[in-house]
Length: 79
Image (cartoon, rainbow, N blue to C red):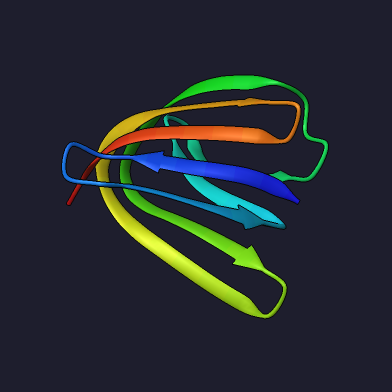
């Protein structure tokens, strides 16, 4: 599982996920467990995640993501 922390100016939330889909500068990309470390900017769109049978999403205006050792921090402005 990937430990995910989403930070916005209004709130923060933490959860675990099997897969996260992010709106990158050149298109949507997927992050799975044991993904290589990454830092990327995010554009307006939808951050989506899956944890087993459960799913979730958050509409954003933009932000940044950092992933290392199955720990992801997503700093965004909500739509």
